[in-house]
Length: 66
Image 1: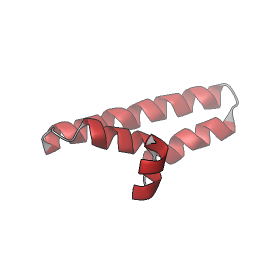
Image 2: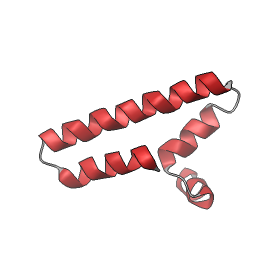
Image 3: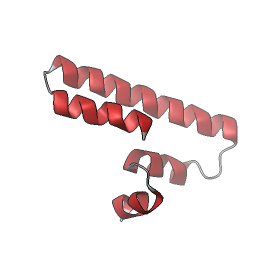
Image 4: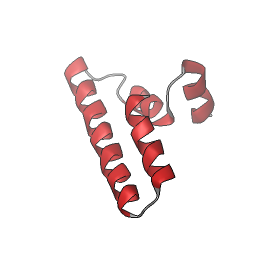
C-alpha cells in the first residue's frame, strides 16, 4: 500500500513515509527530517560501496534525489 501511494505521487517510499510522518510538523522541522533521511541514505550508500555492492549503493544515492 505504501509503495502504491508513493508511486501515485511520483515519489520514493522513503519520501512518502517522511511526508506522512511529518504532516503536522512546521516547515523547519520537516526540513530537518529530510536532511536526516538524506544523511542516512548517504551513509548507507557509502557502506554499500565499501562492500562492493554498487547496485545497492546506486539505489541509495538515487533515493537522495527522488
